[in-house]
Image: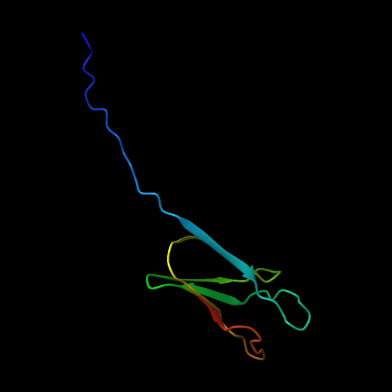
Length: 87
């Protein structure tokens, strides 16, 4: 006869899609990256801020599905020449 094998348990979790958003904060007059600028991304649940790196690069990783707004903190002496925020 067949053997009884008790307690064969399964554990599952939902698949959550995540997204990365990245880019550069660039000086429009010479196309060089702007280091140390605060870039913020937010949705209805959370807000995350990062400083741009030495080349102006920023990155937000593992964002869950949703609608986000991303914007920079404009520094004194500078004028924004692009869209101030992006959805």
